[in-house]
Amino acid sequence: MSQPERAELASLFRAILEPESVIDAPTSLAAYECDGLSAYRQTPLLVLLPETIAQVQRIVSLCNEREIPVVSRGAGTSLSGGAVPHAQGIVLSLAKMNRIIKLDLQSRTAVVEPGVRNLAVSEAAKPLGLYYAPDPSSQIVCSIGGNVAENAGGVHCLKYGLTLHNVLGVKLVTASGELIVIDQQSMQSQGYDLLSLVIGSEGMLGIVVEVTLKLLPIPECARVILSVFDSVETAGNAVASIIAAGIIPAGAEMMDNLAIRAAEAFAHAGYPVDAEVILLCELDGSPQEVEAQIARVEAILIESGAVETRLAKDEAERLLFWSGRKNAFPAVGRLSPDYYCIDGTIPRKALGPVLREIGRLSEQYGLRIANVFHAGDGNLHPLILYDANKPGEFEKTEELGSKILQLCIKHGGTITGEHGVGLEKLGEMCIQFSEIERNQFHAIRDAFDPRRILNPGKAIPTLARCAEFNKMHVHLGQIAHPELERF
Image 1 (cartoon, one colour):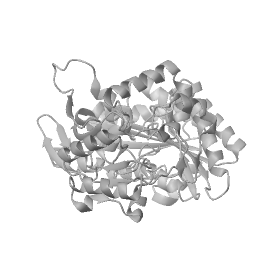
Image 2 (tube, rainbow, N blue to C red):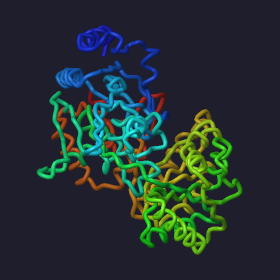
Image 3 (cartoon, rainbow, N blue to C red):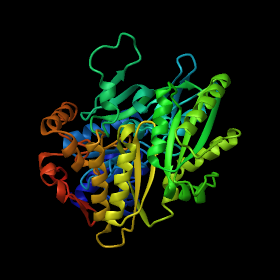
Image 4 (cartoon, rainbow, N blue to C red):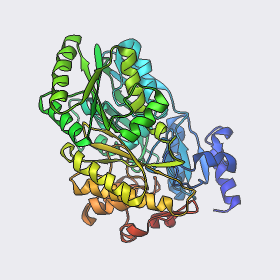
């Protein structure tokens, strides 16, 4: 698009929004060129910051009419390239739509706009004795709209589920600018489960402009046991034994030695830095229930081979233990100029074999890997350390990441647990799903967005992408992707 055409388009959007809510200065646009997976970058045509649903409808309707790509964006903390802009499109930032509309004690719900921070919901609900369970590591900044787009999880997803299990309804602006309400609260709700379809759809089926969340009572008591193991396999078997005993921990998180040392140096959480593996296991409920479970879980841990167990002595230490885990990603970032976060999920029984193979791949590629993962549901987050300034090292890192995701598929798992597909995993989608299945994904997408203006080139690979899987790279900031060339 030429400069005069862009100026004309900006003028049209300024008739809808306040002038300062239309960003077109090159230096300001640069702040929106990537998400948390900063290896993939692209500068958008414009960035728009609406404040109302009506404004979103008018913007999307205009874009649909002119076939202008629309990439919706929350806080930009996503880790699969899902919020990377299109060079000929707009970024629709929902940051200004950040109101908590309603908190209802009787129904235990919160109605919020998409730009509300995840943690802000629990902070607002706390005086009512309630909280919002999904707690991604980025919860202090990530937005609810982004959580819905990626079906975010968190360290407590083992017991309380992902975003999917904690959202009761959404308002969605379709690609044509219409507003639809998808509400699964009613006992008489019938028809297709569109809510489950929208959650995790990465902004490709519509723009989420309002979300109704399920709130839970704050547990009376929560305690964390930190246990030390001499192998990942032993620790994984311990988690399986705990669940087999009928105990579902609120969270069960594991970290290997490299991650432990990084987190301890960063957060000073009291982790044993010589441990091969640590397991954080949280139990919550009534004081009596928790005390009984602590005794059983500690016995199972010792029987399963734990060389040490340590019960957080009070609430302050419980939070300290968790601070190390939740800060593991930034902590590992201090060990290397760059790191690449993988997100795959495997059956718990495959933890040992998969982690051993990841170790072998690390040696083969000459790249260190720190392992941090949700042990309870088998969601792995290997962090590959690399230096983007070294020629060819990012490409080597991408290849290693792909090998890890293919390993997850081989062991009966999936290529994503909570980060989405975005740009990062398009190639691996070609392996996990057949051509028939991928065509069905496209058919569903076309039913919502026939012109494919919403987040084009993401999540669902084209036939051309699958044919060129081995050639997928990002060069000089330009995304090599056939579908992106359509506009």
